[in-house]
Image (cartoon, rainbow, N blue to C red; front, side):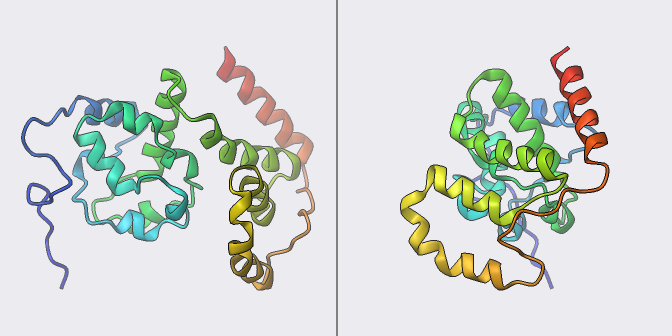
Length: 198
């Protein structure tokens, strides 16, 4: 049986003097019903996240910071930028919080406020560049490029993980073949950028 978690009893969630304006702003700016205010601080999101080790704060911590009104810290966090949009956290969340959608909202707010660390956005930019080049993700290339840019000294320690990725069925060290209709995808992406800039 799962034990109920009381938000008010959780030490990382402030209950007195809360500034809920940031939490409400994020909820309003997130498309659909984010349910971000329903977080019970169970930690399922962080435990489910394949990118949690690269984040400076887990999604659970980000939600506690939103509740505490820690705008500066949230907008400077690399957490939204490390999100790979796998939606695993959203699927597993017992409160049906649309965590990935909230991460997109936080990225947009960070960009608008010019608070983001430019290196944090590199992961997303590299991912987007690969999708534009191939029409799909190239996981080994994404991890390799990102780690070479920012964590080159850690590469020797990451060798076991790299070998594990290479031995996994379906993972190739070679760039993927571009998808059929890549030209159409490029036109769609170009048009989306034009609309965003307008």
